[in-house]
Image (cartoon, rainbow, N blue to C red; front, side):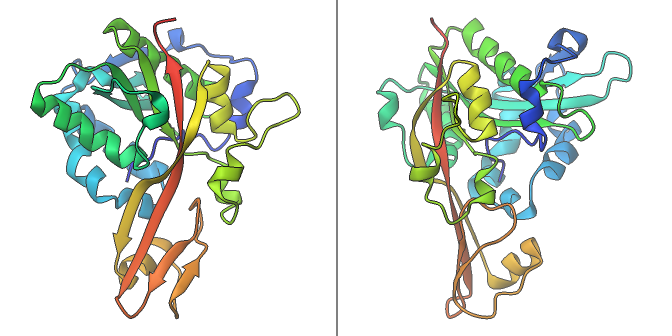
Length: 272
């Protein structure tokens, strides 16, 4: 599963003045680097807890992004060492309905629908963010925000009307028992969102649309979940696991664990 979230664990530091701007790096898309998916596989895998890499739809579609939508997959590379230091993934969609009607299935819907739209020959109207990853050691310099700006510029160049994002709030895992419907309304004294990743988007002009309560659907056997989390689940019930936004449901009679993750739809206009 590849959630739409910045992997920058020090994201709150991005609100400081960035010491290095995006102009200091070299920008490449998968059009420029045909094997970009292979080159960034380890970076993606290291960014997320193991269970987040097990979403069936991600496993079905994600690798195809680099081949079928190469312009929307991009990296920043150090100009001297050619080290890939940040990765962004997105997909175009044919969406002509109000943003308030975006599906509750969020990330899972977006990646599957993008390929369905392509197969149906539909003309894209919006861009949907899928992932931003900043490599360890390069975090805290404002790169997460720069990656969102770059993503927006890609959509703007091809004439899309908006960048939508099923945002995975990166502090929600500290409050797994708080309903997302409440968390999304938490604000700081300055009126900006409490959550740092939501705040990055808000500072860049995005509005909160609503939570998407079934954005990511990750099933597995009990053995799978014990392997992915390093925990033991002796009984059926709900369990809080590290780095999850909500508890998982364990059913020992059915030998099944299920994680249904809520995200938050946010929208950046591109034509204003």
